[in-house]
Image (cartoon, rainbow, N blue to C red; front, side, top):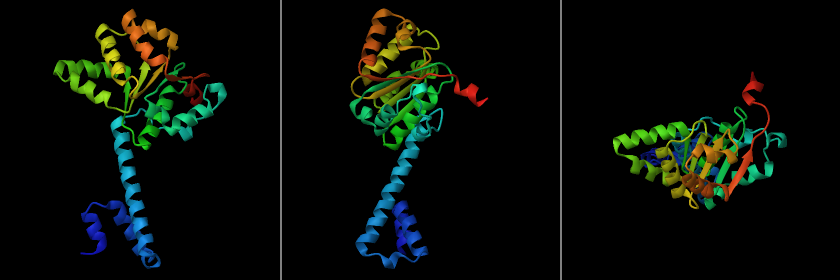
Length: 239
């Protein structure tokens, strides 16, 4: 059995591909044993990182396959390059800090949260993206199936939870309680990104009940990054 076949059999696909490339270019004899081994190990690590990123990205179900590098960073749009550079490093994920993004419809909120989510996946973090209405529907269905606790437990273990389109409708009582439990489970431990057309000052009214609204906003507002996107609709510009 040759070396490449053995590597494939052991599921060392990165090593196998790298060894094949060395053989095809006849460079394997130009390297010392240590150099060749280092190259093969690096190739395997890179292959595994790529597979992990693809798996995390697929599971997150982002609205857009967006990248921070592709963002049009302009002060007039409310995007600060230094803030985005800081967020791209992922320190907020280590600290369990949240990000609140507001702005009019079409200004790029969903693209921005997708870009931040994709970057988090690239750093190896577990992420989930939800439109808030779809999250509420999923919770309603899980309650009917008796699997609510399992769903909330999985959600609490995410490194980053993205809630998009917050505030399109007022929350019902059960939805308020569910949101409070989700935010409470994540507070100070894991990061949450919330995007909304409404200014944060209006979220109180959307949540509804005073005591629950106080509890949710108290856990979100004081230790979060705030990004307020400005300018006309990006969709209108494209048209």
